[in-house]
Length: 512
Image (cartoon, rainbow, N blue to C red):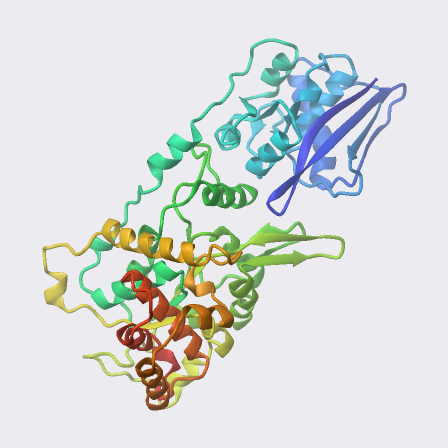
């Protein structure tokens, strides 16, 4: 008897339907074909034990299983459940009539318990697209899959519940969540707040500008000046997720297995802070079966690189292309996958190895030339992709001891949202551009019109401060964002002056 069950394989952030074809005939051989990896091949032992311990039999006959399409490599243990159901149906132990209506996925323990799997959200989206009635999966993943409306989602604790359901018994309860209500209830819920930070008003202003225009920013300052504390609060002033952004970000985290059983949909922008010992593959993604890296997990959020010069140079250089293209393509001999990587880069560093160059009260003990050598660990092309360079100075004690709180994240976020709305309207005819940081040279000339006084100001700044030519476009982009925060149609002289102030590392005498 030939029986078909349906599962799914995830490539990148999209899923493809996989058909398990099982034929049980006279003989004693077991054959599993269709490019399965080791984990899939080992499913026989898990399935056989699970069935035996729950009162069912592994057929003592010839079993041929084909996983179609046969030219797509299948990997992981999530195919245990559909394979088990197909074997039972093909051997006449369960009713096969409902199998064509459902996608089944789940890893089996030896006792038949279903273990959670990765990539549930893309699989659920594909199941709806392919016209399946429902999706049966481990209970720990049910809330994640239930985000997809018009698809019936059933979470099961063990294989017996699935068998009873397929035999027509009401053994499983449908998981239903109100996606929009749950999403909007959590969008602004964050334990951190800008008001936690005492002083540093100039840094907060720079971070507000960076958030408003989605500009990459680097903070340079001595140890204990508050760089990390400030960076961790950037997500609190970014605009809340749209439902589309939340789904896209959740798909990536689902593929990486980062969604816990209590979470259905990500409601807060991600903040990723990898350690400086990270490898280039872990940062941008990859592996034999390519998985998303930190830059993709930070999609629609913030990637924070603390102590930037301590990262290996090769690790930093692989970020150059994703910073420009806002996606990463990982290619292998037989296939390639693409992950989105539209993130806001926030980096921090000490100004020198000892940490006290330009400190107001402590002397730098680094030898001559060491400061510039330390900065040179970061390549020019990478710095070229960072719009705002800001020096952070330590907060004096009188500021730390003040009891009155500073401005809350909520009020800053309102200004950022207003500025983003202006940009959204400006770039509505420009596909793929939604913030000032993404403007190319042609768009800068179109949307940043300077009067004679402003042109003279930026010319003098470049001459007197020794600013490099690459700083010119960055200054104009940041100035455009400052003007948007003030709801000004044109970029004015004081907008340019402030933008010029945010190019510390471009000055030829910096670190000299």
